[in-house]
Image (tube, rainbow, N blue to C red; front, side):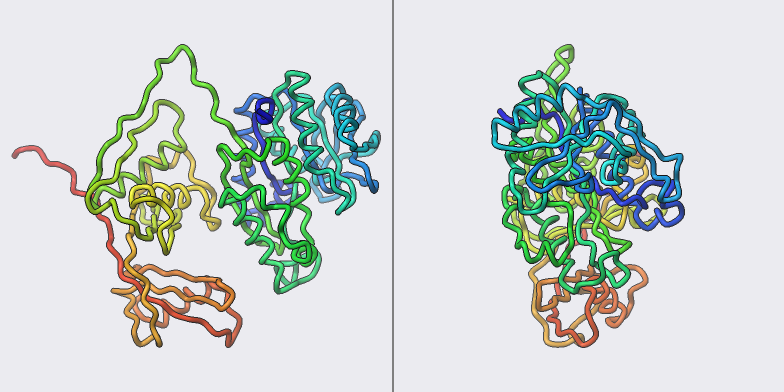
Length: 465
């Protein structure tokens, strides 16, 4: 299996502002990205690689050939971005690079040596996060050929075959930023369609349609001025386009550039042979009131190391299929994450809740992913949606009774649940929903309303008095 020698693959952006010494106070606007990059680095370290292979779109390029750093050390700092103390100095795995060049040659690929000069920021920023997570080992930095030259899949396959031949455990990191034209202050100027590339790219990753990445419209890539697809293709090909453990950890674009952070491949680690195997017992759940416990179990199972927690089997009223929203709050009532589905995607309400609890905890782009340390302080709310009902005017809304869906003609949607504290009028409800859609003035929309079932957990059992 191609993935046998690849123990991890991840995607990390490379904007220098994402390093604390460069971003300083502004990094608060990209806190979700920074935290997700820390998670990728932590997961890469947990895979215990022998070598890290990083693909940078900003390494020096020559047409028709891939670059290979061949100096004795990989070094550089973010001095030109105002933070000379943020530096990287790692050994080059020259043996791996030499064998990769030979393996690539057998596949018709050409390489050239990059033998002097400091690392580019496309390599420096992800490597800064990896070294902060404890990486000090041998590293290979690959530069890309010119756009459209091809050979990306073959390069990834050569990385995997080289790893197998040398019997080395390899973590592959794709470095890439998404659209550079999201706002009028973006570095490449503004294009009103640039956001569509980011939505398409992130959507394919989230939906596990990794093999469809090469089919993204090239004109849309040009509009976006992206530099993420080619590096990601190399990492995916190295893992054989397997998607075990894949998840999008974060996406945001606070400075006009889209930052996507993802685990592309993370096979399950073998169980400790000294520990007895344990199979979680299924617990049958049949009532809406059981769903908050399902949501909590989903998040804690995902984040906690150690024995598995109970799984669930749907019965009764939970055997149906509906849209579900899961909301996480701190004990003080502060919102910590909220994600959901308007229409069902899973086989039953238990599976739908499980899926959306993980999304709320780990993939709400407004927040950094939930950490293990936060688990004891979180409360879980589950809302089951009724049928979506088209309406002709806002007069048919009532924020205490109905949620609302505002839809633009191009498919963008803004959703707001009913009975939210502080939202007492239809105007307030629509203003927030319109903001979520990012509507232009006068842009036509359609409205839908829906009722909900708020799934309250049963009160704790009381002893006899």
